[in-house]
Structures are given as C-alpha cells and as structure tokens.
Length: 121
Length: 389
Image (cartoon, rainbow over all chains, first blue to last red; front, side):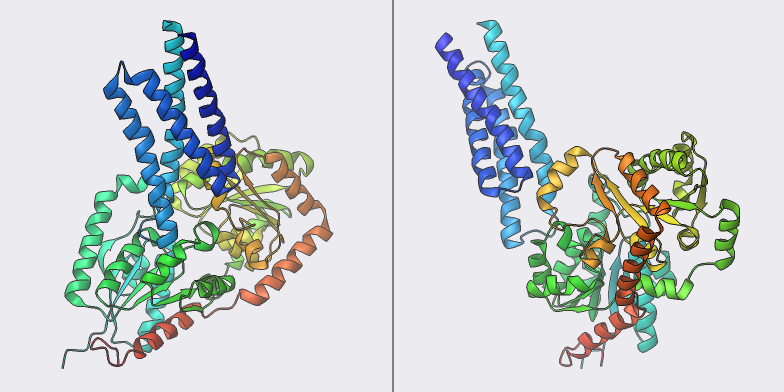
C-alpha cells in the first residue's frame, strides 16, 4: 500500500509541476512548451484519476475524463484549428476561459481523492 | 431584364457604429438618392432612413452577457438571412461589431452579395489570426487607422484607409464654448477630468481607481478640481453611488464630453476611442485600463500590440503615459498626473507630440471617402444584375 501511495504521490507531483509549467509557458506564449506540459498534465491526471477513483467510482471517473479531460482538449484543438484555418465566425478565444477554469479543478479533484485515499489507508 | 436593385443592407450594433453608419448613409444618399437602406441599427441610422429589421439598442454586450441574449441574436440572424435571400440587396455594409456581423458576412458571401466591412474590429490588437476569416468573408475593407492598412494588406484583403469618422463628428459639432467657459469658471484653473468609458463594467472597474488617485492628486495640488464625464445618462446613478464614497468632491457632467475635455487641464481615461477625442483637443492625458488577474492571465499571450492606448499605437511610441493594471495601482496614476500638472515642460512635450499626431490623422471626410469607396466597388460590377448602374 505504501508503494502505491508513493507512486500516487509521484504522479501528483508531476501533475502539480506540469500545471505550474503549463501556466507559465502559456503566459509567456511558449506554445510548444505549453502543448508538451499540458499533455503531461492531462496524462498524469488521467492516470491518477484512474488509480484513485476508477475501482470504487467508475461512473465518476468517466465523468471526470469526459468533462475535465476530453472536453477541454477538444476545445483547444478546435481553437488551434480556428487559428490555422479560420473555421468559425464566432471568436473561439473564449474557450480558453473555459479550459483554464477546468484545469485547476481537475487537479484539485485528484488532490482531494489522494488525501482521502491517504486518510483511508 | 431583372429589376435593378438599389437596396443596401447595412448593419451596426454598437452606439458608435450607429453614429458612423448614419453618417455613411447620409453621404451615400447625397451621392445617390435612390438608395434604400435595410438592416440593423439604432436611433441615428433609423433617423437617417434605415428600414430596421431589428432595433439594436442595448445590444452592445460583452463576454457572457451574449449568452443571456443568445436566442435574440439567433432570431436576428435568421431574419437578416431571410431578408438577404428574399430581397437580394446590391451590397452588404457591415460596421464593426464582428461578433455578429461575421455571421451576416458569411451568409451574404454564400449568396454572392458583395460585402463591405467599414471600421474593422481591432483584430491587430488581440486576434490577428481572424484576418484570415476576414479575407474569406469580405470583398472590401474600409479601415479608420493608417496602420491597419498594412496589417490587412499583409493578410491579402483589399483595404482602403478612409480616415476616422470621429473627426467628421468633431468638425461638425465641436465643443460648446459657452459650456467650456462655464465649466472653467465653476471649477477653476486646474481641472482634472476622469473619463472611465461608456460601458458599465468599465465604470465599475476604473472609476474607483481614478477616485483613489484623485485623493493623492488633491493632497499634492490642493487647487486641483475633478470632473467625471458621464457619457451615458443611464450610468449617472452608478457614477453618483461610486463618487459618494470619495473624500474628494467631484462634479459629474452628463453628456458634453467634448466640453469636459476642452475645459480640462489633464484627462485620465480608459483605453479606447475617447483617447482620440482627448488628443484632438491637445489635452495631456493618462491612459489606465484595469482588468481582473484571471482575464489578464488568459489574454496575455494574445496581447501582441505593445500599447493599450490608441494614441500611443498610432504614434508607435509612448507619447502619453499608459498602464494596463490588474491591481488598482492608483499611486502610479496619481504620480503621473501630478507630474503632468506640475511640470510645464512635460505637459508641453506631450501636447507637441499630440499635435504632430493630430496633424497626420485628424482630417474630416471619412464618411464621404467611405461612401465613394462603396459606390466605386458597386460600379465595378457592371455585369451584376443587382448592379447600381
């Protein structure tokens, strides 16, 4: 159990570090670094959610993945496509507000799940 | 032979767009009295002869406010597209308001109706990639700032610089000298005016900051008197409520923006067209704009222009102090104001730079020029059954 908690702890650290790194790289408009750190963030958080939540609350896990991972990634992809090919009449930059509201929430959900797991253990 | 159409569809959403749209309509009607205008506008355009499909009063919404009116916008879009299909106007003229007007441009383009965009949205400031969309949707772009011409030319859009219609308005109306003298007599020699903007959100964000700086200015320069310009009567109660908490007395002037500026020794304003009005009267100014930290964080990668103030952007250098703030940095604002009020050399340098800029851009005739461009574009399509000629 301790090894598992240690593994979760490492994943949580990666998630936190990538959250900070993605925020900084976004702010400084370093798009390639931002894309990489965001990918790292979503990967680490998805694994973390899977290990912490999936076994006991499968439906909740899928809601998290759909709402906090898939949806923002689709939004970001649409925004990137709009920048490249001018697809939409509506200014799609508003999706960034939506994405940046969801990113910290995903981390907090995982953090709470981790704390509850530690207490439970 | 199909019947020759002289119908033009014109759309403006903001109140400033309504004024500029009305002026353009007057110029077009002077050159061709047979034109009939249909579309979207407010009271000025309606008075100028617009057959309004919808009244656009109260439709200048920002951000999430748009969602609350979404069904109304959908209905307007549907009605406009229906009109374009049924009536086939000879041109569609869109004035700023890109959030809605881009949808109309798309519909008109699909129907093969020429689209003229008058007063471009400020894509160069925050969304340069949208110029590609503009290229797809617009046949002719009429811009009001000289630097916009190269920006849109680079994107491959046919563009003409027509000048800023604001200067038509100022040349036509000007400031009421009687009111200016009255203000000066009431308030004294040193008047600092606050022009927080015409939107409620801007007033709520900027006015408390301006009033905090007024306290510091008053401590250093006790003779300084303060005026708040309330450009929209609807916001008088809001401004009164905010001002009530200020320890420094401030006079609120409703309307009469030109007179307030002309009577002032120094103007403190939010970023926007108001800075051009202040520049026209060669008044030293400070530009301050406040946004929330989360909005600043999200918008930061897209802030590609080095200046927030139009006058600085037009001059391509910092000719008046400006600052984009997340926190209320009133000490900076007060410090800049005190320097401009107390230091005659600094004041004079600022006025000199403003006069150089105004010599270059403050020329009337934008609406006239825009009307000529519209008619030229329409006459360049002689084989079109919907042609003017």
